[in-house]
Image (tube, rainbow, N blue to C red; front, side, top):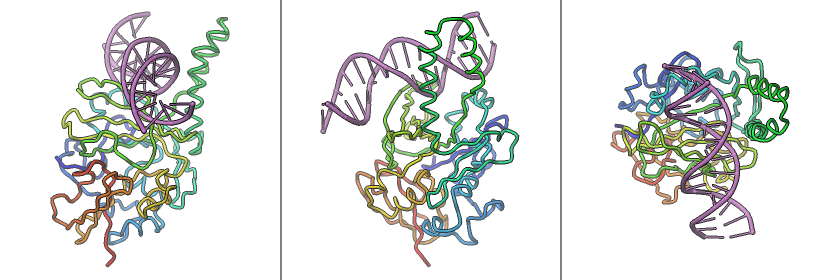
Length: 323
DNA sequence: CGGGTTTGACCCGCGC
DNA sequence: GCGCGGGTCAAACCCG
């Protein structure tokens, strides 16, 4: 089993598909595959040779491009791990998908992209992530008090009708697997745990976290693979509408890169842009890695493509030395 | 005392 | 309609 995988599920396509970089067989998870983005001819952010992370971030590549490179099309925007969702794929496949995705430019400017899909009748901004949570809270509150207190059948019916109308929109999601002994991997953001559930067919509970920043509705789920307990599956939902707190403390070019330029993009994703064949890769531990280790790796090193392995967090990225 | 965690209860969507 | 399972709430608790 490799240590670093991404899976992709195209929501709304009627079933679970794997992340494009992994081919068509979900069971391919055992084969570590570095994204060959060059082959994704519709994606233009990768030049003829691999670029450095910094180059990537300073290039015309934006969240949009990146997200599409990762298969996060705007109309189908969930990346999931089959280990997590296979067991429940029948449910998932019928979940409606948000028709639009909020994308952040490399400079942190938020833009709204509305894809030309029939479902794209609404639009949203990243700030609505928090608003969505607020509304759901209100909704809950209404359910518990408002609707019940009003009492008469008419208002109850109206309440129900309203609920039917406002079908819950799915936030953009993606999941990744990391080999780690630590469940809650440090990613620079501050999270508050709000729930824990036992998962069917798994000995390990699933933990629910919410970004502690006010009005940021980003959530993440953390669980261990029931197939390989050493693997942590982290699922992010939504997009941060603020800078990474660790960035604000300001202590690393890495944070600057991943969080300033692409504040909503988890650092771990950058690890997927690794050049598979460059000779000198620096594995840089994240500055918010408590151990603050720095490691140098060579191509062919068995630890290559491992991020998080050997330390207590998975926030490593590879950096290509300039030619 | 404020902020985070725990955990039982509740809600909701889905399949049967 | 019912039961199941995932997701969320919120009171109680913990900790620095």
